[in-house]
Length: 108
Image: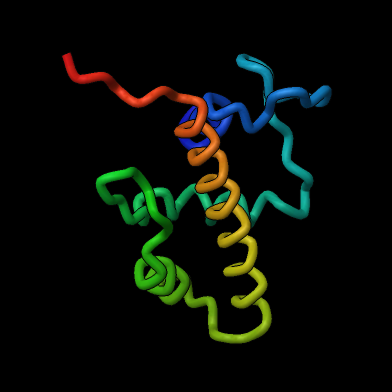
């Protein structure tokens, strides 16, 4: 597993799932989600990062990406953006859970 999947797995996003997700096991996508997942993977360079880690995607970068692909404003673009946001929110939630489980560093 690489990239986002590895981070989600490390954050425990796949814990307790009988259908895969354990370390070394493949994660399968529904066929109707493959295109959206590909867009999500291309946008991994668009995270805004602050002192506490990622805070969300840079929506200007997302818009530029969609424009570059020639995806015209309309229902299809709004639906794709909603899918991208769902992935973004899931990552942010998984990372927040991971931070909550990790004790803060101690100053020695």
